[in-house]
Image 1: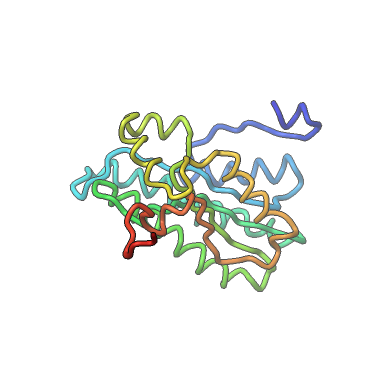
Image 2: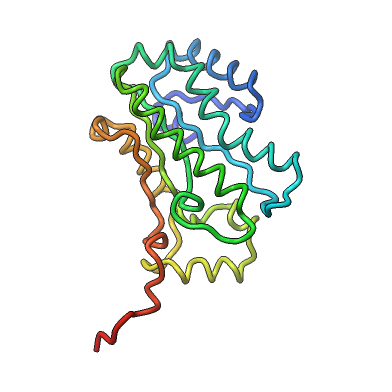
Length: 212
């Protein structure tokens, strides 16, 4: 609604990106509606379960929703992307996995590491077509999903561990994608931009020396 109120054109298309055929159909509908495709942004993830003994259905769902659409959406949109002047492939990864880990999140961290590998490999493969491939790696972002996944007490601990002192705003993640999709990001490819307030650098609560 906000896009249309601002004079833009937008379509809400509800799909299960963990389903191969629904991804294929989504790309086809999008190309038909808008006369082509300039940008892919894969932003979906499934985060339930997590320990090493996670059941097979949860494990499969994690990879089908998180990792596989990187391949599916790219493969289906590639003929359209090759025709554009500034094509972009963007994915939402995470600092969890590529930058840091915690117990009980092995499936999620592994999936996000796979996305980082996809970004790097796809970037070099598609560079000849002028297609850039990049990821944004959010840290603890203050969204409804975070409120659902962790208790208020644990969320307070997560935020307290961020060196810059607060959780990340959703708009700060969105702005990173806007930059990567813009002309200013034309020469950035194969990269994963961490937006985490410094949490992947380690803790700022412990000093190796007395600074007084």
